[in-house]
Length: 125
Image (cartoon, rainbow, N blue to C red; front, side):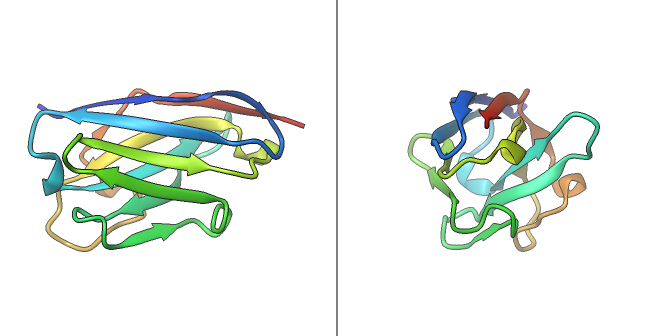
């Protein structure tokens, strides 16, 4: 059983920064790609960022490119999302997710096998 626990969310003013962390327990962390998604009230869950097993490949949603950065530490079983220049439209519950596929990194939520419980990020204007 794989368990994912996010932390680091909170309330921040527009233009500020937050760093989200996700600790993964269970199967070998380096076996899966890791993604971050978010869901705002009344909206579908959307892709934010993904990082490959080795950390050598990343991808970002257009809306966060240049502002967010994803990283992982396979020795500590953690994946992080550094969020800078936050905007009110970044307000959402943020989820980390693990993808066990042998294929390349994916941006579709249904591809992911395990999910955390989410952490709230609120950006005030």
